[in-house]
Image 1 (cartoon, rainbow, N blue to C red):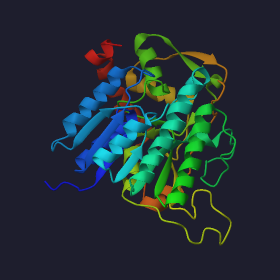
Image 2: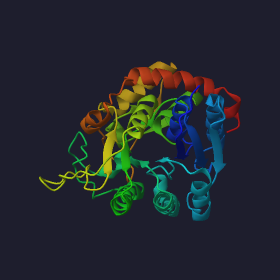
Image 3: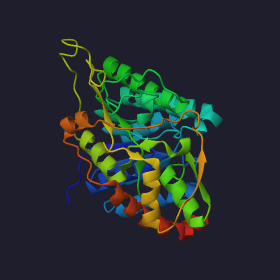
Amino acid sequence: MTLNKKIILVTGAAGFIGSAISQKLLMENYEVIGIDNINGYYNPFLKQHRIKDIEQIDQNNCWRFLKVNLENSKKIDQIFEKYKPNIVINLAAQAGVRYSLENPMSYIESNIVGFLNILEGCRNHKIEHLIYASSSSVYGGNKITPFNESHSVDHPISLYAATKKSNEMLAHSYSHLFQIPMTGLRFFTVYGPMGRPDMAPMIFADAMLRGQSINVFNEGNMSRDFTYIDDVTDAIYKCFLKTPSSDLHFYDNEAEPSKSFAPHRIFNVGSNNPTNLLDFIELLESSLGVKALKEMKPMQPGDIQSTFADINRLQNWVNFYPKTPLDSGIMKFASWYREYFNSSYYRKI
């Protein structure tokens, strides 16, 4: 089996998306250096489970895992120096809108300071391409749908969203100053097996299987552009294979925010198919075979009422088309979750 010569650094490799793209890269025979701090934002057993899944994919001793905080600039620089990655996929971040109200400093440390350390690593070690995670949260209270990369993202309504907008601005400045190709991806509500326990699919599934009630915010008058993990992985990998270049005609017409005179691009990654929260709960009920006990709640500070991704730019860039309908994705998620709910990993929680 021929191994690819490029070395890929994946941050947040024990996370939901990070572990999925690490497995994809290993299956494509790349050497992958994964880093994660395995923090306690949610139960570390799930993160350890994901790492074990990655290890099972690695048939050619191409996987290295290092436990490290992005905020540790010395350690990050040592990793760049020792392993000499060609491409970086930065998926590490302190996630969650509501948690940012409780622990704002963790967002500054991880999402700002940590991301700056990654940018410095890319600058000092001549990285060929940085792909980094942004979020649909940057669209803030935007009422114009579908969300398009040309829309203003200057009015975030949560600290989490503000840090992700800051990432885009920092990345653009480094891309321009040091001519580092960079691709920012705005993810829309990623779900699926091995997903995050702080997100609605796992919160709801857990409560439903325990016979507990679920909180339905804004009286259920919310919708999300749910995007299946396999489709997200496909989008990242396709962007990984295509390096952006400077747009020499950027100022010929009206400036397009998702493009630049720098080798920097921003794309939405979504399903282009928003689903009402109550309809989503019905699908989950059907897939789990359990009725949800719903408690209607008011809107939470920092939440966005609706998300809806315009993915035309990503389609034109890398021929990306989501392949997983929501009903099929929820069936796969529910099947996995029932098994996980009864597993030894889950019983450690």
